[in-house]
Image 1 (cartoon, rainbow, N blue to C red):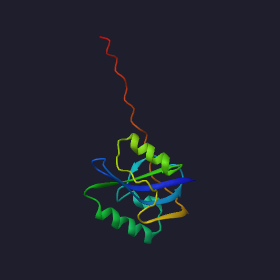
Image 2: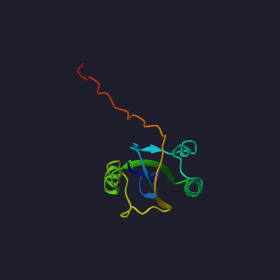
Image 3: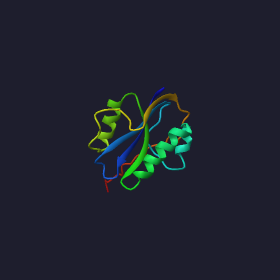
Image 4: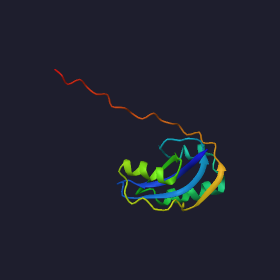
Length: 120
């Protein structure tokens, strides 16, 4: 099991906030919507708090879920994607849960750009 971070990122990539942290199986970065957040099997009282935080931040922030071995490796991945102002601490805004989630989110395959042959 690895840590699954549920976090908000600013649409202009100039900020990041951690909402919650769970234990889960491996999950690549996926954008969370109202439809797929229920697939995380989060307890209903915590899910209500998370949904309120997401609703209050919906204009400037996007919700993501991603697993990582540690917060340091998550920060490296986010910096590589161009995000700035990443918090120094992994302390989530809502809570850290030590329960294991049965996440059924789709692991999407990354798009790979094919190199065109320009020798014409």
